[in-house]
Each structure stands twice: as structure tokens, then as C-alpha cells.
Image (cartoon, rainbow, N blue to C red):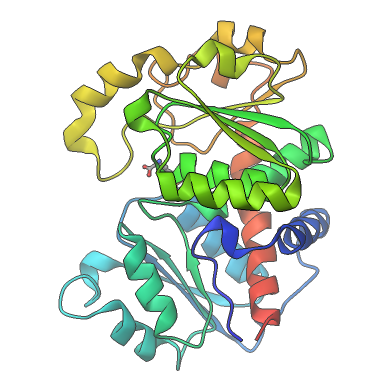
Amino acid sequence: MTRHLLRDDDLTAAEQSTILDLALELKQDRWKLKPLAGPETVAVIFDKSSTRTRVSFAVGIADLGGSPLIISTANSQLGGKETPSDTARVMERQVAAIVWRTYAQAGLEEMARGTRVPVINALSDDFHPCQLLADLLTIREHKGELKGLTLSFFGDGCSNMGHSYALAGVTAGMHVRIASPEEYAPRADVVADADRRAEETGGSLTLYTDPLEAAAGADIIVTDTWVSMGKEEEKIARLRDLGGYKVTTETMQLADPEAIFIHCLPADRGYEVDSEVIDGPQSVVWDEAENRLHAQKALLVWLLQQD
Ligand code: CP
Ligand code: NVA
């Protein structure tokens, strides 16, 4: 059966771990596997801006022997005249997989229902599962075993990154803390799904409003922009509401002395994180950005093996 990655809990704990193992192997030997040699094409569609996702998918598909077909929605029929399912039916006869960065999660679900090739969420308003595979790979490299580690996320918990940390983190058996004002807490259904997954893995999800409490003893400190793509009109309110959740040197001092700092990037220095932290010795954000390449290659290889 065709498998898709639309949200982080589409992967079981064992599957997530298998993909991370393969990502590490591919990082050590970048040209080891060429499952797309043929040549096969992978469509990578963008409704929103991107640097890391665009570059890492284009390079990764080429590394695997395939051809990336990068499409901007503005220049395609998708999003205008044509539905996701009709677009999927056209593409599946010509491409090996479809990668899509979009707004509504419902569009991705429709795309996946309409096609027999894997569909990968390259960021939606609700989840960013490709980023989480790269983040977990980075944490594994720097901290070893994921199970039992405490990851504290600060800022907009009701965002793609907040939701993905909740689901992917507990899938890995981590203790995920999300510190945000109450009105920016993760969506209740995502919390319920994370809680269910945590029961299977021994992980946990805890919501905080006090950022200092959330930072105490954490192994990984994480934040993300306060103004996600599509939320620009709320910028003034968001800067006001989230101002108390900035990651500073004080946050890092409260965390475990060996803690690392990660951020999916792009970052707004001076807003969600001070430059002393993101450009400081505990930050591993450049490893994290590189790991998008290795994690997504492993994901593609794994998804194409499931058919
Ligand atoms: N982190 C991330 O997805 O970056 P881009 O928006 O540049 O792709
Ligand atoms: N939450 C951010 C992530 C960017 C990679 C956004 O959606 O803009």
C-alpha cells in the first residue's frame, strides 16, 4: 500500500527510527543508494517560500539518481483552476513521488487520497514532519539515544513546528515541553494524539505557560519564528503576545549544562532568539539545516520501498 508522510505520527516509532538509521548511513556515504536511477522524477511543489526545503529536496533527489521537478504553484494550475486530486492523478503517471509545501493540511490529505505515489508534506500550516526528521537526526548525533531526553519548545505552540515537535518528539520517546501563552497552546486534537502516542513509547507532552519552568534541566532548547508564513497580518499582536518566550542566555543557563539549541530557520534574531544563543557555542542549527538533506533522502528511499 502506498505510504505518505502528511504528519509526524504517520510513522510509527520503529519506522521513524529506521529512517533515522538510514539517514545516518546516507550522511556517512552520500552516494550509497540510487533507487531513483531510471531516470525517475520527483515533483516538489511550493505554495510558500523556501530555501532549505527547496535546496535539500533538489540536491537529495539528484543524489539518489533522480530528477527534481520544482514547481511554484503561482505558475501551475494547482491552487487556481485545478484540485489537488486532479493534479495528483496527472502527476502519478509521470513522477515517483510528490512533495508539497502548502497551507491547508486538507489539501495534502486530498492529494494523498487521489494518488498511488507517495505524498510528502514539505510544511503545511499544521505540521512540518520533514524538519522533524532532520531535527531528530541532529539530536541523535549530538546527544545519542533520543528516548528519555527532554526537549523544550518556546513560542507559538499552535504552529506547524509546535505540533510537529509534540508528535515526532513523543514518537521518539522524548519528554516534550511546550511553553506558550494559553492562547498559543497546541491544538487539543494534536495534544490528544501526542498523549496517545506517548503511552506507547514512554514519552510525554507537557504544556507550560511559564518559560523558565519549561527550560529547567532541558536537554534541547528549541524555538521558531513568532510569525509563520500566512500569519503576517497578525505580526504586531504576535510580537506582543510571544515577547516573554524569547530564548535568551538565561534560558540556556536554566537548561542542562550540555544542552543544545536548535531552530528550523529562518530565524528572526532579537525576537524569538537572541544572537548570543543562535550564534553561540550550544547552537547546532547549521548541522540541523544540513540534515534536511540526509533525512529526506532516507525518507524518500524508505517510502519508495513500501509500495
Ligand atoms: N526550515 C525550513 O523549512 O526552511 P525553508 O522555509 O527555507 O525551507
Ligand atoms: N513556522 C514557520 C516554519 C518555517 C520553516 C513557518 O511556517 O513559517
